[in-house]
Picture 1 (cartoon, rainbow, N blue to C red):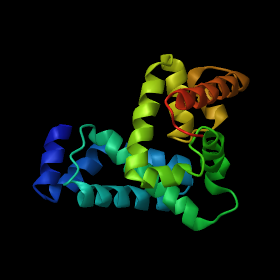
Picture 2: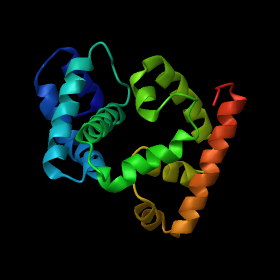
Picture 3: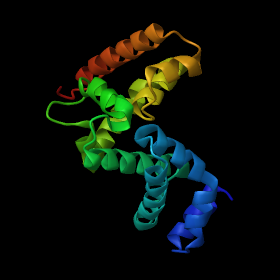
Picture 4: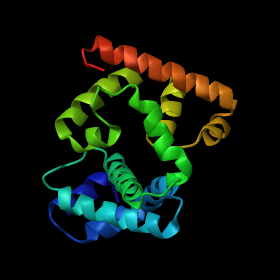
Length: 190
């Protein structure tokens, strides 16, 4: 079933929308949650919660890219679950570590989690971030998204892109530094 048909089911409040979205994107949502949580049961619950969040948010939202929308909901749910759990090694440290790395590029006094919750700030930051990422090479963009959206570890990224770990670290550092400069040029206070 096409995404627009699934969104139409959500808009008409037909419960089959949940089943169709789960059938089409359940594995992708589970993979995102599992990368962060490293727990099968919690990951399954996050998938269910993400689908329920979609049910509760469509309408009024009408996502153009259903997969991205659902992945964002699953990722947000997994991060929230990590925050609540207060475990010493959240997601084997990757989610927390990637957020710490990215924090140097965010406006002062705003955490990555707060930005995700503040719709207006999130929209502005997303627009600026998309413009910045559009100017990167495809590899740099994919490495950035792998690290800071999917919370992949450096070794996993190195393996996926057939790069050395040091090359990945260096690329991420240069990308973060470039993002910081870009944000400053766009007038976003850091």
